[in-house]
Length: 259
Image 1: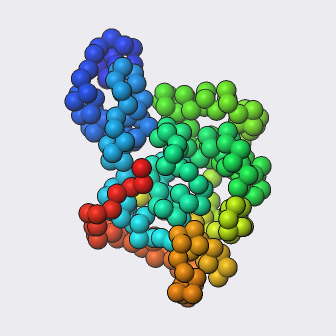
Image 2: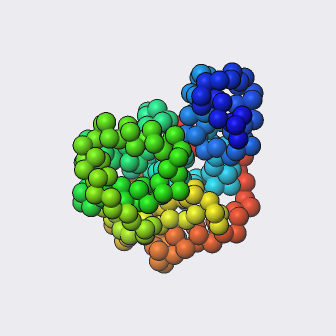
């Protein structure tokens, strides 16, 4: 334990190979890897390494869930991976630096993101409450503390909501987005944890009705006339859950996460 604290205290120099081995052994997620490399005075690890935190089978699921918008997040609400429909729904994730792809940061500091979320105040309060609840298990971790510090500096709204000390439990609900091209989207938000003790989860946004299904298809450029809605929209979310529990054995080596 003492040796692991030395990099944070700048008492030891480590090669990139050693840093990569430590990150792999400790199963660091992409943002924790960036923090480790920064402490050690090395450039941030290449983007393709960052996606090692997401199992390959889950990346395949993201692709095959389309046109359902889907993403993978961790307990800090960092966006670790996402499919094309999700990127087109929220717009421009690929153009953001990796460290800025965080739901809290985008919701609270990006005017464009804020404009797309109907009922923003309630959504922001819910997200900050979930973040505070999650931080209880991570209070000593620098990556969590640095995110809180950044949000306090950049967002008066975060400062206000954070000081309310509200905590929220995980919940599934219906989200409402205002997309500049297809209009209002009503989507059932469902959280699928990737393991019994995993903090990484797959998030699906299943369209509520026929009109919403047609709109998400438009985001992907599909021909509406060729689209047939499943018998139950919510059955798609249940199917995704069953696939996740089963382990998703199908591997498509041609798929890569969007970056």
